[in-house]
Image (cartoon, rainbow, N blue to C red; front, top):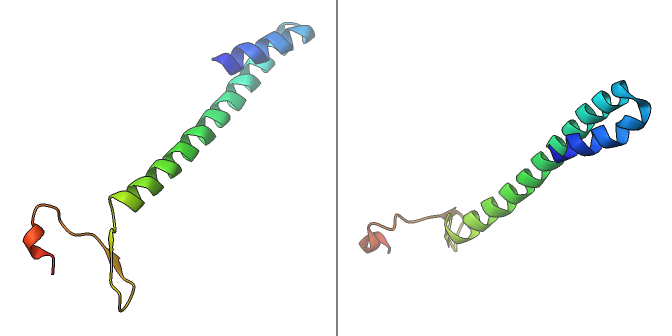
Length: 77
């Protein structure tokens, strides 16, 4: 909504049509920036989970990475 308000405010110079188009344009740009920010945060969170939670073990012979079920610590050899 902030993008729509900013676009409408800037578009008011061109009259009612400019305010409408400016509001729509501002909303679209705001949505794109919000989506990009959310995607970046998701990538960072996913990388942290991958590094700290998933695939914590690596075979020294073939470099295969895997995780071990934490419910059964006796299975670790």
